[in-house]
Length: 114
Length: 116
Image 1 (cartoon, rainbow over the protein chains, first blue to last red):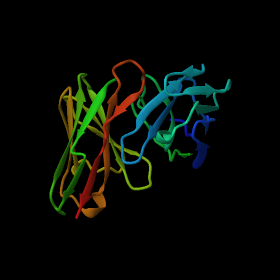
Image 2: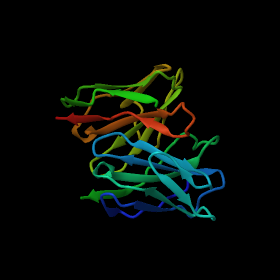
Image 3: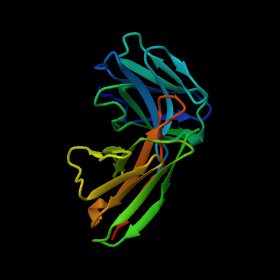
């Protein structure tokens, strides 16, 4: 699976947008970009995923660059409860020996402050 | 959405004893489940892939005789830590593919194992 690079930590003011970047310059054509978050001492929570088009759901937006080498997760109005570790993962969506496996990097610790 | 229930949420055991952790998919069937381990201030590491009706597939460096995985039904996978030692103390998490078609994975709430 392609390796991802994320900043170690970020801060965001409550109510403002949180923009979390991720570099995945070695991503393959069949690999999707997934975002999960983990609140302290809980299991990870799925946020969003995409292939090449920008995606939006009730939790967040995902912006993928045209060359697919990087992406940004956007939490439009961050709240204190969004404080968590955010993981950017790339993996194929079907087939191959890597199918189904999620390889977690160190992620970004997002702290939302009042 | 799809829910994966993990039990117990925490357990303390003595060195040398065995501990069983259960992972259940609620109202959906999971032919494949995944077991992760997470040490303090570290990321999740995949330990093994649990396959219903067949042997689990272990990641490199994970002792299959120490971490016994059983996936006897389409809704239940168990991880047994045998002859536990303090270095096995960790946060164990299971997951299954979300059946709703979102492409994501649903995780259990995790089990905090402390071996004393």
